[in-house]
Image 1 (cartoon, rainbow, N blue to C red):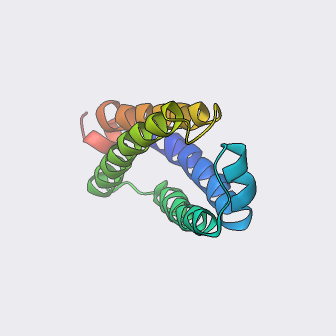
Image 2: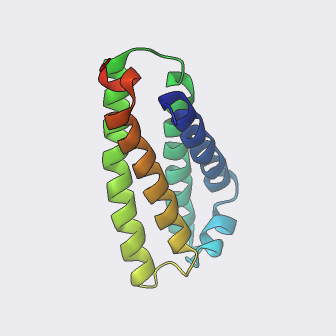
Image 3: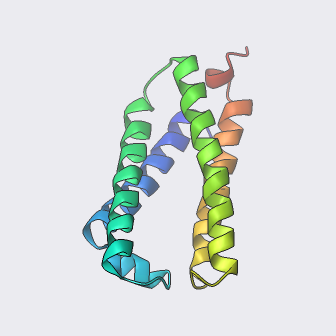
Length: 129
C-alpha cells in the first residue's frame, strides 16, 4: 500500500462516519449503545465535523509530493489513532459502548497500522531511495 491509497481509504472512512455523525448522530450513537441525550447528540455532531475535516484533509493531501507535509499529517494521524484506540477500548470495556465498540477499536488499529506503515516504509514520505 502506498501513501495515496492509504489517504484515500482514510478519507473515505472519515467522510462517511463524519457525515453520519453530523446528519444522524442519534442513529450512530444508538448503534454503539450510547445514550441520545441532547448533549451527547451535540458532541456526536462535533465529532462528525472533526471527522469531516480529517477526511477532507486526507483527500486533498493525497496528490502532494511534499514529504514534510505528508510526514506531519501522518504523524498527527498516528498519534490521534493511538488516543482514539485507547478511548475506544476503555469505552467498550466499561460498557459505555456496546459490543459495536470493538468495531471502532478495529478501525483505529487498521488506520494506525496504515499510517505507521506509510511513515516508515513508503519512500515518498521518508525520502529514502
